[in-house]
Length: 138
Image (tube, rainbow, N blue to C red; front, top):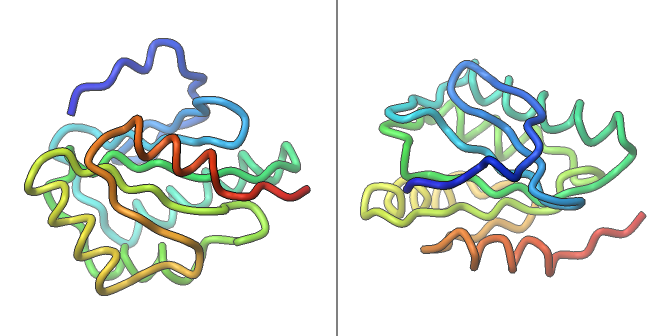
């Protein structure tokens, strides 16, 4: 899935992805092409998200573009299941436009569903709309 991030605000980078704020309340994770998500990169991802949100005292939903991942380790799925802080991360919207992206997203949801609402979408627009519909109480 190719996505134009030129209008998005870059907020950081991990060993396997770029992180953006699309708008208030919506973060987007764009893995590097051919990325592998393991325990180390999952910890980096969660930490980057929480550092950004805590510094601003804001909550947000997180959209993850799954199509660029080639592998996600079980240890990474456990990090996402156990570590997200619901006080700051309201939901995960996984975007899988390719058969492999949908498969990785389905495994993630089926085996290691996080403590926060998580859904799989076929398009970025649908994922963003759902993310924006999730409550963002102060």
